[in-house]
Image 1: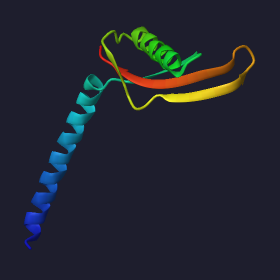
Image 2: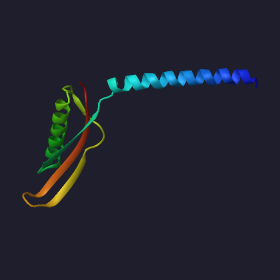
Image 3: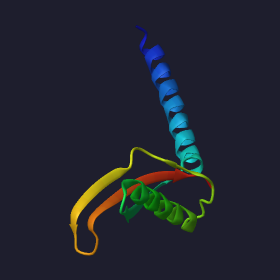
Image 4: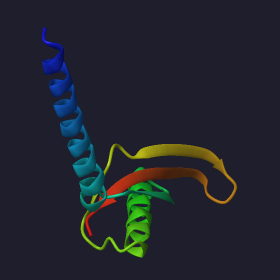
Length: 100
């Protein structure tokens, strides 16, 4: 193998890798939507999840993301049997991404 060829190949690969990293660094904040987390509670699991989604959308709107939101992953639902005020209760946590 010619040593001169490997230096050229190495320099070319390094330049291409640096250019790719620069493009990804510049493009990622503009295209990526941050994740917003919300929490809710209710007498049914469905009400708790809807409250958590509403809470996450409110957080997104406070950051300027007024577009539609989509769930990122599954909602986490916790069932509580000894709540001091309601007794049996559901709590939920969701993570959403929203468009600007």
